[in-house]
Image 1 (cartoon, rainbow, N blue to C red):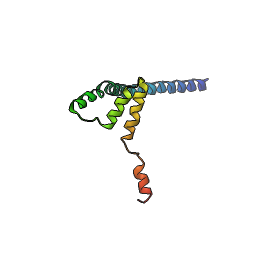
Image 2: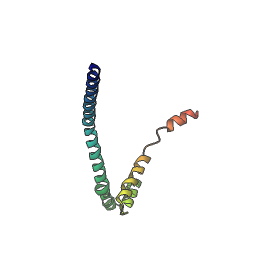
Image 3: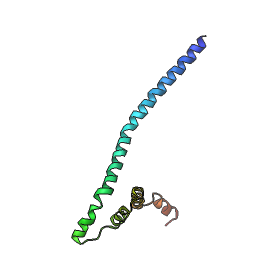
Image 4: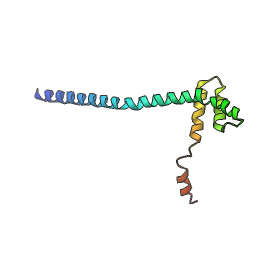
Length: 110
């Protein structure tokens, strides 16, 4: 009979520790999730409302928009918001070189 009391006590302690750990993990993830949502909201706001205004500013100067901004403004004329947002992510990714480019160059002996 004492065996079952010990086993059930250990199970209760384990479950209590598991519940405490789960609550700590969830509370630790709230702040990064809030920051991520805020950053995505600001990015969407900039892409939809702010960047297209550069067209009129540059047109007033008689200058040409940068290529990425021209491409974004062209995408904005499409009626699909999903295409607008996804189309900008691939351009942002193209701004950064491949992380393994230097490694491959060094391995080739160049």
